[in-house]
Length: 202
Image 1 (spheres, rainbow, N blue to C red):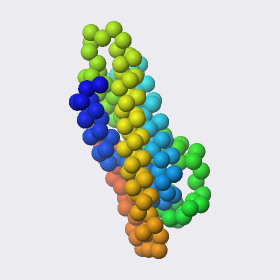
Image 2: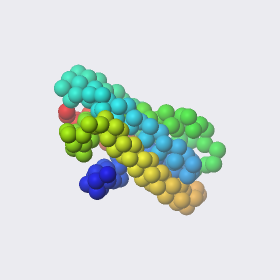
Image 3: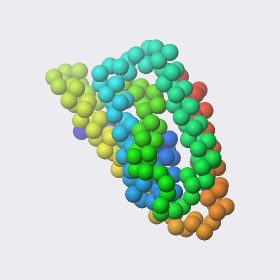
Image 4: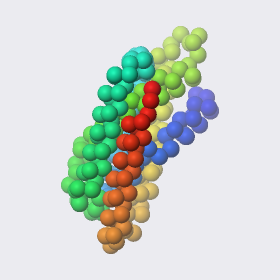
């Protein structure tokens, strides 16, 4: 396992994006356990992209504007839905122990956030082969190992983000104005990420 791979992966994983934002929101609104569940969901959402890259499906997204566009705009729509639901549902961003969302719902949302991001597939398609020698007889196994390490790193980093957010949640329990602004900030961030995704190219 090269140091370059580990360092590059850490930078990519730690850079704030939709997954980090979702995990932070889960930690702030539902506590440490929910943030870890959200981190798990986002990590599981990487699996289809990893599989697509390893099996070569990523090449289709890379060469087909239609396939890339369909997946991209599905991702945009879902991010806008997340923004709308954050603003609409007053319970979605309130600090309470018995928030109404189940672990399954949290995981599904986390999975969808990452599944509907075609740039992840392109990233895996361009990233993984750089660390697999063409001379290796078992290149697929090597890519699977690297992908597993990337996913483990994703889960740990996202969980740390979420647990940190959960640690400060009690400080805002009695501040409804702060919660209201947080709701707007998270909704605005989802919109901004959706707009960024909408204007990305292959």
